[in-house]
Length: 177
Image 1 (cartoon, rainbow, N blue to C red):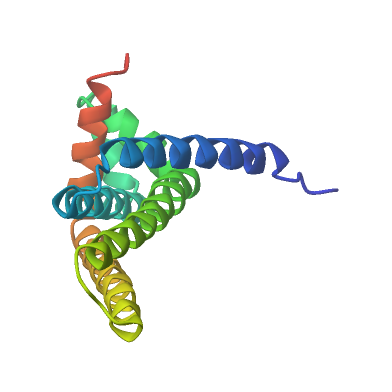
Image 2: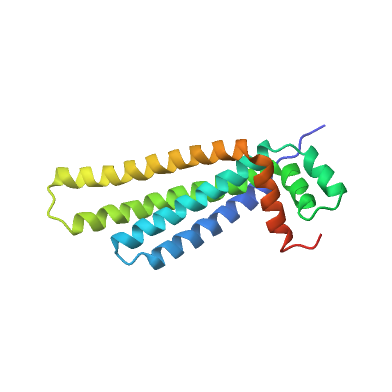
């Protein structure tokens, strides 16, 4: 018996990632008015999106299905959504952690490059100092992003049931169950 190739999922992720990256990049460029404050705010918003995406992705992957099945049998609002999230945890994780998290990381890096250019344009830096500014901005963004994502994973593992239930209840507000 041949295994199915996940070509459809690959194409969906390819197109979805392009659309998300294009949208986030376009919004970032629209709001990036060569302002240090605006660049920093955009970077922080992108880090927050990646943080929230990682929390939900890891929570869905690590959550136990049994309590949600029990809640769904008692018709508790949002429980059926939670069951679907957990049963599709590979796709949920891919969309939230890989697509959203990676796109936010890449775009925040690009905005970081803009920030470095703005900082260098506002000062009288030697070539070596310009390199230091660019590398420092990159290093700060990378360090904060990785540490925040690490914190997200720790929070998600410890509180997976609560997080998945909160997400399920939220989604159920917009779906018919």
